[in-house]
Length: 265
Image 1 (cartoon, rainbow, N blue to C red):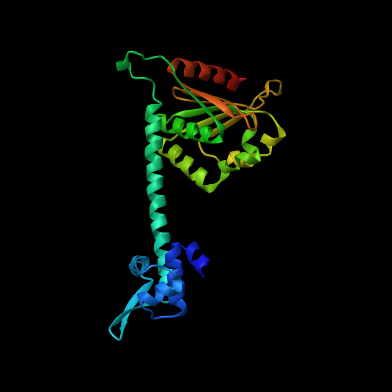
Image 2: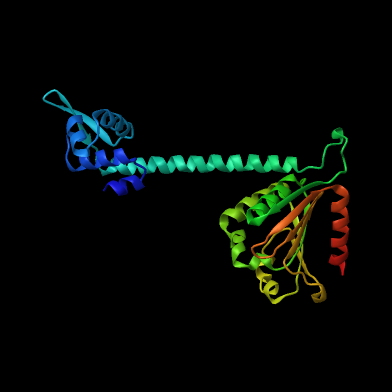
């Protein structure tokens, strides 16, 4: 039983003592110490913890304090309480995540003119999938309301290692930002069987437009994301994902002009 008790959150000494009391109650602290091969001071400290968790109660026999394991429902109550605590932590963590994302978005704004460096690009290098995820969300957070994100890419999102994009958690977190800021999307992609198979998926997306690149100009392991004054250029080679993000109005507008030229073809 000890190992199972540890799996629901009890520490080693707690599991040992509760297991003994579950099979034989009531017991004095001295008896518990002997059965568990623990010092009396360790037993008293652990019993105090078990009592605070509602797993052990007390009684008296011949004026000697005895300890009694509570029923199985006490373990159920403990797990329920920990589940509620975990839920509260997850809610708090989401709030903290938003604060980090908003701070990252603010930090990504063009350098203030008060610094005397206005117009100089802010450049961030990143690598790996986690780097891309953070940069992508940061670009959304830093964009003004009613912005359009321009995306030029190959079919990398349909590779199995990018399946998280379609998970409920990722979809909900991105949708929340996009809805809050009313961000639209224009997507230029390869004219390939893989992309044509996703016509139904694309048709369900709101604020979204898609067009195909000429087959002679298909992309390979490459993507560009543009929104407001931000441009991210990505090399999507498997096991070698690297990218650069530049925050500069002139650079972004010139990339948008090139995007529009391809969009109109």
